Length: 135
Image 1 (tube, rainbow, N blue to C red):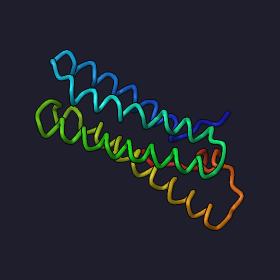
Image 2 (image 1 turned 30 degrees about the vertical axis):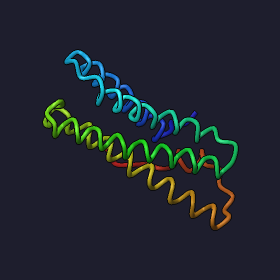
Image 3 (image 1 turned 60 degrees about the vertical axis):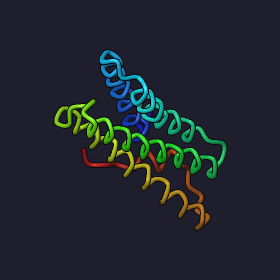
């Protein structure tokens, strides 16, 4: 089975978000950290749902939801960094990873919508597998 770039990246990102949530909870920050946990782990969950979608429209919908969650997560990360709850130097990679997920998901959604509009018969799984991003 071929590895799926967005599925792997969103899963690894979710694991990092869980670790950060635990750290923030140890410092008695519960409200913002729960928002970050919810949106940051939702990205991968929606990606997986999309990859197992019942139709191309369902695939696009789930990937678009994942993109929205990634954008929300970026907001929470920036807010936590700017408010001092997260160290900016220590967590700059987290923000970079989140922006990368946003770019990948945006590309997936745009391409999938275009393919749907062009009525191209394309298996969404094949598209995702072939999509690569420089690390």
